[in-house]
Figure 1 (cartoon, rainbow over the protein chains, first blue to last red):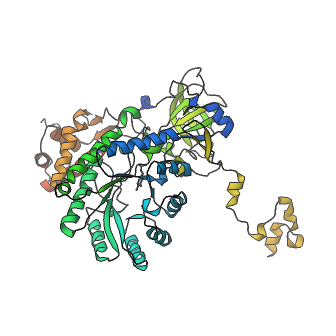
Figure 2 (figure 1 turned 120 degrees about the vertical axis):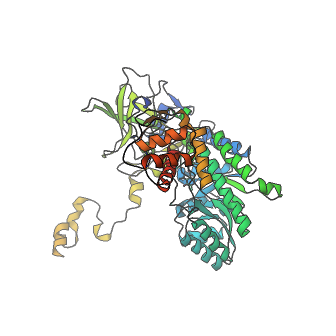
Figure 3 (figure 1 turned 180 degrees about the horizontal axis):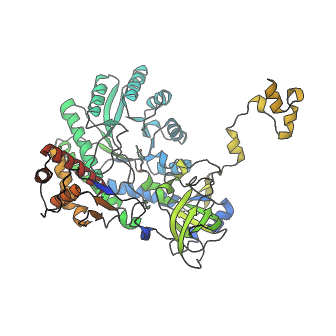
Length: 480
Length: 90
Ligand SMILES: Cc1ncc(COP(=O)(O)O)c(C=O)c1O
């Protein structure tokens, strides 16, 4: 050890990550060289001619393949696996239906999502009800219908208890817990904290109630987790808590829900390598989860007791690459700093996820000319409406169609109805027929929610003169 | 807690990416897997160097406490915080 570290002033050791984006000039993925004329087996020009631009295009085949794969890799390693489809990731009805057909339960986090799942025919006992806001009315319904509730906080626990007693039932519930895995920023605002003893308090509270029984533990450690070992730690911690509950409180946990968070093959903005290299394979996650699970539940197996069922709530890993967005160039310019820019008919209003992903952008015609650093703007009158800050693109012209991918996760739910109508979402069936699964908005849709008070109800500005007393609006108001 | 710190140490320093990081003498770090770069302060650089050489947490804390004339308490608690921080990034 040499001595040149010696400084006079003590300062706690600290590591400072450098600012995102500043370093990876070469990391900006360019429009892929290969030209896309078809998507999911259907001609892009036909899709736009028929359904307009922009348009979200979803693949039924890819969606089914993805969910089957994730179940297969987990079921190969552990016996009882349930996939709960995270509605918030994409709750377009047809997409949920496909996943329910594949055997996925519904994982919902609000009254709306609960009602949506029921309206799609999902029975209450195949709904996992999470989230920090469950109103009394929806809890009453969910409890009566036998949904599996995972409680987030003490007030909710009290409410569940009260409803269970009013309905004179014994309700089996799970609690969401949070803790530090040492790998990711803990999502400590959700559920009961383990390290501080909150989780134990919740357990105590439940034990005292004749109407509520604790049968499950839930945690969700974050989203787009690039480190499979985080799940190993998560499962270990959950299992050890389960074992403590068994040993000390004689509580038998039959369900471990590890949430979602497996990454999709998308490019996070701060990640330098392309997703094919940066994102670990789903098998690595399944190994981390199931190795820990098998190891930590060996004591149950040895005494001939049932192992807990495993719930996974994977969202983005299932739907992200099953959808693309086709968008068109509506204008091009040179920015004062010399960079090329193009304005697209789809921006962050439709691609909410472009705030943290560098989506892949592909040309649909043979590119001509020199590739240059280009900014892709959306159509909004808002400075932060940027689809890609920096991407190598050939010269673009008005009317060029671009394919942005993958976009299936969180865009059809987090999109903003801001300034523009939201476009068609279509599904390419397994036989490559195409149908609309969510119709584009139009004025009628937008106005449907407006209500007009009687004194403002006139049809045209010209009718304004025919207010009572023949005064104009302004005079009318002034007189009153 | 102690056991957890040791596993964390094992993961980061022995199995993990730490071994593959390029660390310059001025405290600039580059992670070839993600392209992410970092800066370490002087004490961070010292701690990392000691840990990479296979010193235990306790030995590292002891060394730092001697070097900077701070109590063992101060050295080891800040070392733990540092290790958690490394765990997040690596
Ligand atoms: C409780 C819960 N489960 C599942 C998910 C789905 O996560 P992902 O899409 O990252 O798999 C989320 C997303 O935030 C969540 O909060």
